[in-house]
Image (cartoon, rainbow, N blue to C red; front, side, top):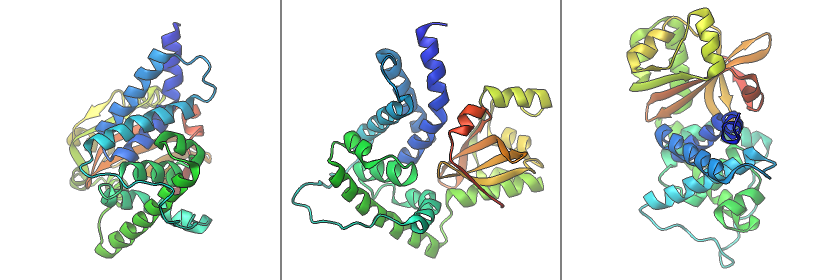
Length: 294
């Protein structure tokens, strides 16, 4: 195995986590794929010698790539954070508040995506969703840890407000769309499945998932298009349970108390654009999975 192939193998163990971060930050599965690919290209060029925490290094690279992208596409100036800024106070959520914020994050970010500045968005998602320490985020956004905490406070208030507005207006959010998908799948409701699937939806599995699918005759390769994916799931997913995967709405197939397959969903607007099946036990072990019944 060449050095590049060895790096690629190491990179693949972090790909799903990087995609989760990138999708949350960008709100687009396609742009997230591009950002993660750019991180791989930079790793391959630089080499991984001397990188002790590859996951942290890659998260930093992806975040910086996305921050540059958000700044480029932004049509407004960013708010500055400096010594002249009034103190925002310490409004870090307690564990109960954090649980509520995490549950509503997917819902809220879909609405406030264009109201958060690039720095606010990166800070909020990395800290409140993926628990990246302020010290690491500060290096990414080029702010002091104190200023970074202030950015997080401002962002958190915006997200809280958007979440409350969503609930008042009855706006659909990714969690409800994933739940609708699972219900339609179990009921064999083909039309309901088509309603929550983007016409160009893609279903893909990692190598372990594809091997499992081929043995059972369930999935042999990636699928594209709403009808093909709906046919694959109609009347199935009976054992799948709703879950939050690293804070993002998803599903998991649990056998003997252990997750065997994780379903990651990328939602844009009110439809699912990508379903990723992850069955690699090492990748699953690195995920934060919280299940609940539909």
